[in-house]
Image 1 (cartoon, rainbow, N blue to C red):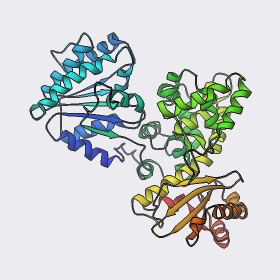
Image 2 (cartoon, rainbow, N blue to C red):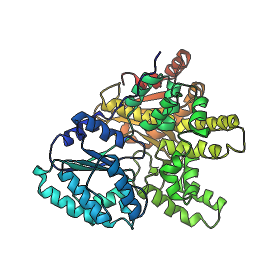
Image 3 (cartoon, one colour):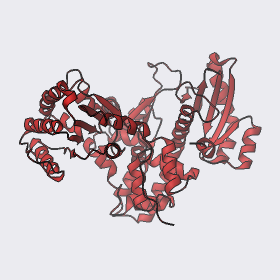
Image 4 (cartoon, rainbow, N blue to C red):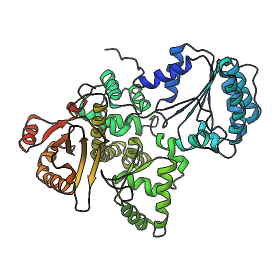
Length: 486
């Protein structure tokens, strides 16, 4: 059977929004943000196709000094057939962009966050002057400016901070999250299959980053066996994802935060105390730096998050730390050391070790996937549970652990869940989970009179496991159930 062409998946709302902006036929200044590889450029390209705009120049801003930026811009101008505009400094660059927009061009500037660098920051002031002139004559301007960036805090500093030159100049903004699970399923239905184990493996590794799925498609491993995929995508000399994490963020961090990042990746749900103990075990003098590392990684880069149990007060000191991005977590926990060792150990042994570590990481990945599916199904009116708040977990000092706490406040229904990758372990742990449920309900008298449902979840459940789960008084769900209708 012929291989199907790759398509454009998901992003229908964002595509419609950007297409409407481009169809206004007047001045616009659009900000598009999202992590690297999330599909910002593809979204812009798809929108331009829809409105049939051909006077477009795309510029990728390098992480360089002013001379490097100007040289790069001149190259892009030449490539896209822009004549008569030869900027020689940052001020004339802003002027040339404005002149193109007045001529009806759409100028798309990728990696715009690099203008937050000290050596380039003056460009924001020059662009402010030009943008203000264009906005004052908006109805007569047929072109527009699109800026794309992957580091949210630096984009915000350029465009949203009240002291920034470009504050309040953006006419529209689009933030691209990960693809939803329905879009991932569309990709798998078209180019592989939706086997629950494949979905969990790929989602835990790539989450909703379309470029990674396309890379697997182009290497003909998207529908293949998991070790073959890992070997082709990460361990060959030409593997497309072998240096992805370094190119994304880790090179910029220059190893300064490895102490925290690697530990959180391999110990999802660790506490401040866990991190302090780990830091002291590695370097007794580094313990005092951990708090500062966490603050930078959370607030500047958005790489880690601190979650608290449901109903906890913001000031409670029982938070747990997690890597926000599945790919980064999987890379640090399972792939980074293995791929760095390819010149010194047999590749098949390294792939085996990476696969084992990834399988361990899929326990936390399953919890995240289940929570995402519950929220997505509720948002789309699918399934049997109407959420009224975000899915959260619960834990306390008595050892209580609930993977899933779901509320339907309108119907006064409380659903408490446990997730396990292995169906036999899931069934065997139900008596112990009863104790966790009892302690939770004792601590939460607000749920007296509510209907309490207990649910046991695994990637795939056979008939015998479902029967045992139901006999124990639980609902049984697997990824086949939770993806039905998406």
